[in-house]
Amino acid sequence: MREISQDKKIVTVVAAALVRADKRILLARRPEGKPMAGLWELPGGKLEQGESPEIALVRELREELAIGVEPDNLKPFTFASHAYDDFHLLMPVFMCREWEGEPTPQELQEIAWAAAEDVHEYPAPAADKPLFDSFIEWVGKAA
Image: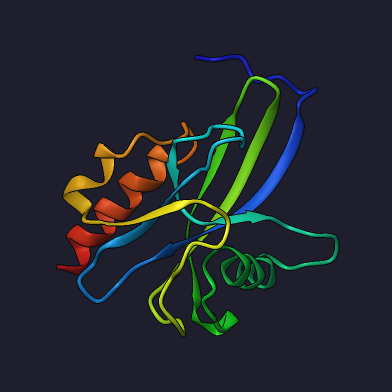
């Protein structure tokens, strides 16, 4: 078992499992120049001072993908808690199956709609890999 350090900064981010009617999930590839560039993840980002996770996610999805999401359409789905070398990531994930507009990259990222059976073909940050497993499990139950 890995020893847990108590002196790491905790970084809280929020993410969305955007799922289409055909049960494909949207993944975004981190652009060059950002940490973990080239890896695929669920869209989202950091909370700003005073924001709830839902409001932060509405803002992030508008900024990153130019889509409109109502907070009521964000349903708690799962979360990640992962110790990276220099910080600890805490990431609540919300499922969203309704939004306005077509997701269009706004920050030089690529996007892909992945089927459950293909999601692990996308190289991902360590914190996101268990989230992909939660999606696969959800698809199995929703079938």
